[in-house]
Image 1 (cartoon, rainbow, N blue to C red):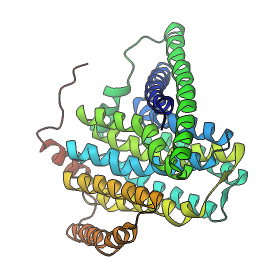
Image 2 (image 1 turned 180 degrees about the vertical axis):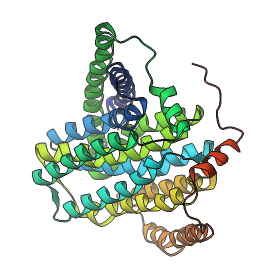
Image 3 (image 1 turned 60 degrees about the vertical axis):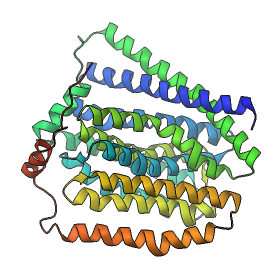
Image 4 (image 1 turned 90 degrees about the vertical axis):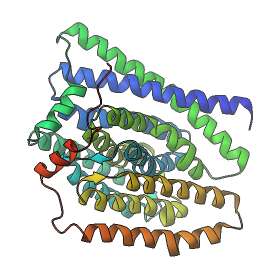
Length: 380
């Protein structure tokens, strides 16, 4: 692999992260200036913003005839967001979630993943499928705005207000400044996406692997860095609802909005490998997160470690499959016959030990207060 290809990937990654930061900052502050509540900004504007790299890369790849990169980018990003972003965040600080909306979002995330699989069964996400997904995005955004107005948990409202309320005076000068941030970030995103897609295509050609695998790994990790950064910073500041809500919301937007836009413009062919393995893995990951949210609204350190371990196992499988390694069969059998069943038994045992199901808001609050690292001081 040549130096220009490596440089293209590195610069593309850096520009995607920088562009997403500028885009999210400008969009969030602009929304605050025009009067949107901090909770609405956090649930919609920021989730859309952190998904902007996926959108830029998927559109860029689709328009250049590299649809497998576009598809792999969304699938890989969704898997990375749950297993790695939430996993790493939970290892650092166990996540206790009070926000009622998140428990509604997880079933929605599972539902839209099932819908995507149904649309992909015929081997393509066509324009009609794209329009349906986009309509779903509009409905989901409206649902978020409606539900945010019903949020009565004072701690959750304070958490979002601390992060997204604008202390600035409202006026056209402030609005223009934030608009420039937004447009500048968007421009950098487009340039970064072009470099990343170009570099990723060259990597696929150099190593003789499919563009789908490159999209599932290198590209997906790069476009997921904004979600990872946002969630880790939120954990450091004790804003755990934001850390989890950003991931779940971004995953839903990735399917409904990004695949919706890409399929509407250009259609997205879906390979047999994606239908038979990668999309089912994405669905399994979404389903696996449900009992963890259900058992006490808490993601513990060991659950975070489990998530990270599964992501490493998934990428190891992709690597072995890409090179046709002779140990692939043994690795698959160990995962299917031992590791996965053991995990399922463990999660079911935990679920059965909690006869009361979901914790009440009072219990969730008590759980938060019992943790010594609940609210680290902010340095900004």
